[in-house]
Amino acid sequence: MSENEAHLKDVYAAGGDASALSRSYDGWAQAYDADMSGWGYRHPAIIAGMVGRHAPSPQTVILDAGCGTGVLGETLAVLGYTAIDGIDLSEGMLRVAGSKGCYRDLKQQMLGEVLDFATGSYDAIVSSGVMTPGHAPATCLHELARILKPGGHMILTITEQAWADSYGAAVSGLVADGTLSGADESQRYVSLPGAPEAERLPARVHVLRRT
Image 1 (tube, helix red, strand yellow):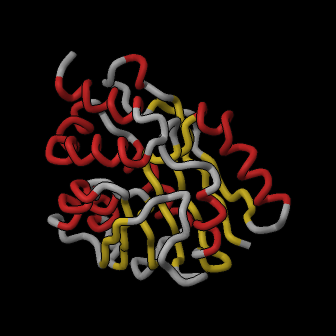
Image 2 (cartoon, one colour; image 1 turned 120 degrees about the vertical axis):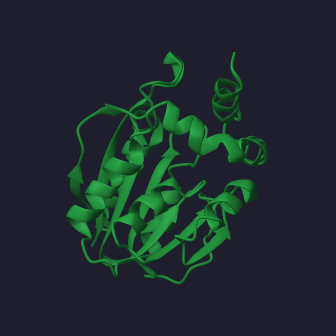
């Protein structure tokens, strides 16, 4: 097994243990961008297209939830977005993201816990590669909805397995109680087509509007 494959295996093997997940990502931070690029990482480009469709103003205030090394933030900055904040549980990933100069602010915070932002802080929330087995719990959607402005959009990658396990039910509940409404959805795709077969997880980008 190559070193990059071992890193990918480790993050899924963490099984939702925040400390183990943080250590795995800290150890992967320096090689992460090259490894993901080599596997044909698709999430950021598809999310960026949805941001352009639903939040086209370059002044849109965006939270990148689970920003990692800032691959998505870089993509959005190239498209002209200038007000992007990021959160991640990994200090190592945040250091790399900070070196890119595309974020207004970066904080170490964990999805699934109470976030240190006021209610209605953001016009849009994006999240790439986080809503997948062994990572952020589906309960994080409630807190993300809290900090999203009315009329704002969540633009999230969710793997089919995570959707079946818990995210589908969580989204349905938030739609049923009037917190969110479905706004858009991509076609099914594989986020890492060049990765080992076990990690070629089919996903969709889901766009949810805060009511």
